[in-house]
Each structure stands twice: as structure tokens, then as C-alpha cells.
Length: 257
Image 1: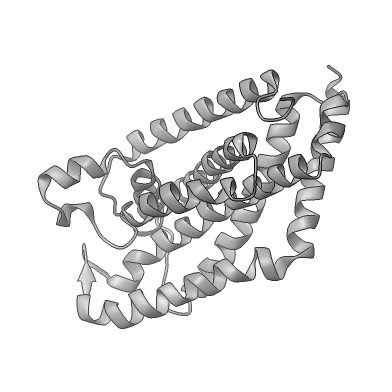
Image 2: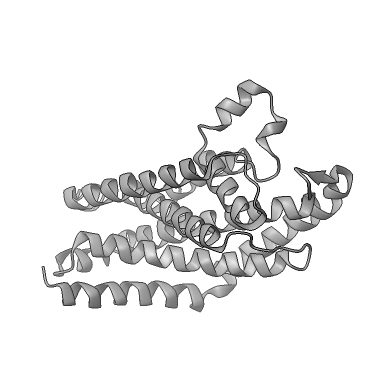
């Protein structure tokens, strides 16, 4: 396959994704920022005053990394699932399939669009967080790498959801019944050290726990889990989900059927 052709195709898909996000910024960028602002006001400011500190940090400061990560992963997921399913629904996915571009290029292009939107929303939410609390990045490399890997993981998950979706209702099932519960139980608002031993062990099966805590370690230098394990889990998910996405595209599941 012509490498130069695929690079041009990749640039085109990414450009299309970026233009789509920026053209309807009121729908793609503003809502997550408003939602996170409400979290900061209600959980951080109002409830946080009663809680006081957690693990030696002001409660607002403690939950800020988790809220930033929550906005990144939900936005990355939502962007890819809506974009790729939209391509299926309007049937312009067929134009990409008959073109010389590879399946990997199609996947990477859509994932890159989701990651870019996730990073943009993450930066906006971080800016909002600075109005409520102070954030000093303790480990910049960890912070950047974890947020990128987490965004890629959920962008790939959104791609797989879009492949199997047959109607618009299908793209809301996973965020509602899987993503939201895992996010709220992923240590965004609390330390798992507060839980009974049994539920601490159960929490370790939640991948979002590792993302939130690794990102919190990057900013605050505090984590409930081993950072090395978090990297292994994230890299493993990236490899597994990309392989699954590629195989689904190669077999034409949900596309050529």
C-alpha cells in the first residue's frame, strides 16, 4: 500500500474531524465545560467544604484531576462513536472502503480526531479548574502520557461501539450503562482507601481507576495504585482494542453486512 497516499488520507480524515468539531463548537466543546463547571461548584465547592481534605489535599484540589480525566475520556469516546456511526448512517463510509486507503488509516484518523477533541476539552476544563483551585503538575511526562493513552483507549472503544451500532440508540447504550458507572466508581470523587477491603479489591477491576489515579499522580504526586501497573493496563488496552478494531474493519462487521 502506498505510504504517501495513506499519509494524505490520514491528514484528510483528521482535518475533517477537526473541522467538524470546531464548526459545531457549541455542541462539541461547550457542554462538557459547563458540566464540569457544575461538578466543581456542587461537589468541590459546596460539598467539599464539609469534607475538608482527602489524602492531605483540599477536596477541590483532589477531585480536579479526576474531573479533567472524566471529561477527556467521555469526550474522546463520544466523538469517535458519533463520527464513525454518522459515516455509516450517511453511507459515505463506503467511499473510504473502496478507496486505496488502508483500514488502519481509517481507524487512526478517527481515533486521532477523538483524541484531539478530548485534549481540547481537557485543556478547557483544566482552565476552568484553575478558577476553583490551584494545580501544580508534579510529573509532566506522566500527566501527558497518561491522558493521551486514556484518550486513545476510549476513542478506540468508541470506534468499536460505532462498528456494531445499527441505530442511533445503540451509541448511547455503552456510555449510559457502562461508561458512566465505571467513571463514578473509578475514584474520581474519593480514594479507594476509604472503602472496605472487599470493595477495594473489586475497584481494582475498574480500568478507569488506573487512569484517574495515574493522572492524579502526575498532577498531585498521589495515587492509590502502582503507576507501572497503570501503564501496562493502558498499553494493553490500546493494543487489544486497536487489534479488535482492525479485525472488525477487515471482516466488514457492521459495515459490509
